[in-house]
Length: 147
Image 1 (cartoon, rainbow, N blue to C red):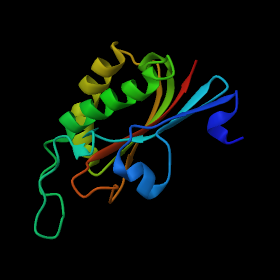
Image 2 (image 1 turned 135 degrees about the vertical axis):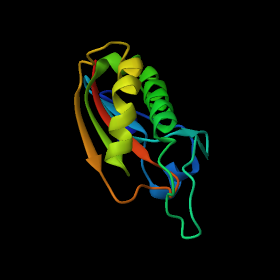
Image 3 (image 1 turned 180 degrees about the horizontal axis):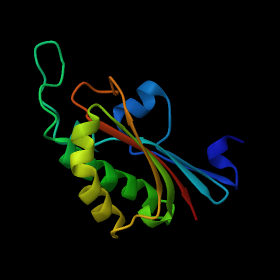
């Protein structure tokens, strides 16, 4: 029996090309915990609000951070919904960003709107990183939820 077939484990995917190419699932529910892989601002196979790039595929402007962050939370909510959960079940999140200042500028309002409260009841870590999976990607968020 594979992990996805055991009574205590359920997995979910979006069916995007990089799931098969890289070899992973978007989320795994084991027992009362849901582990959500790093979500990004995609709509199907397309990146939402891609950052502008120069001729060397380097980001030239981080102004799309807010829209990418909003879409990333939408995607996280969508994958959690498949388990009968939502962002209110999230107990831990880690935000990986290309530019910490750009993320801090928008994170408060975007996160509060996503979680639906002024004081999101979630532990949160913000990490600056030099690169993410796609050149025009500015943010990726991984989560753990409990149901």
